[in-house]
Length: 84
Image (tube, rainbow, N blue to C red; front, side):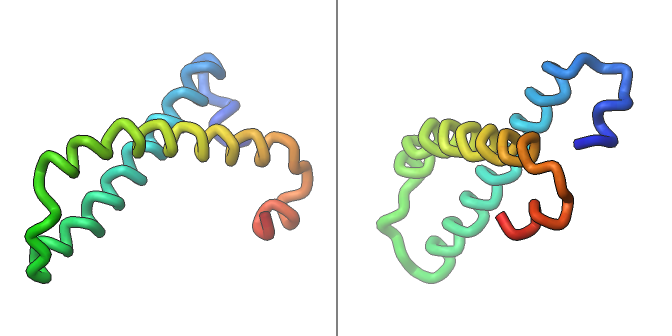
């Protein structure tokens, strides 16, 4: 995060971009992992179910990403951040 703060962009843009990128990556990982079910023979997973869970994935990703950034701003020592 410290390396991002030296860029010429405003801080609100950096935080929003970091949250959006983390949420997009996490949603892509969830869909990649759950799409395995289709190849393993589980036909109960349908496209409507995948689309209906998307708002919950986005909200959970934003909330957990914001919590992680809050923790990283409060923890001053880099060694302690790896344990939390």
